[in-house]
Length: 132
Image (cartoon, rainbow, N blue to C red; front, top):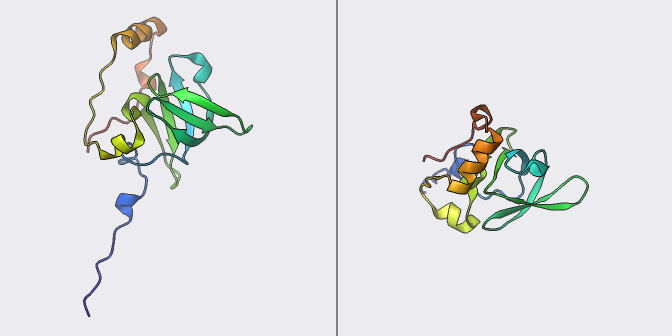
């Protein structure tokens, strides 16, 4: 009999290193920073994802739609870890993001101007930048 190879489940599990290329629906998400103050602090379970938006189901059973482009999210992984991710790294459809190898984030000029107005603190921006 041939010995069976052990299939590693590590590459199929969500971790801090593969979160951007993984399916994120079902994870707990909190908005930790945003250019729009009304989004900060919103948390819930991610139930749907479109090209530019997340749909979160909050504890009060309200579904809120959050734009990816202007927010920094904190994802709680199944193993108990949490990771902050810039929403611009998650822009695009999930099926396209899973296939991608590398994404370069470029600040749009309008966002750059808004950040200067808001006096954006760099210490808040300890976010995961994708590099395989």
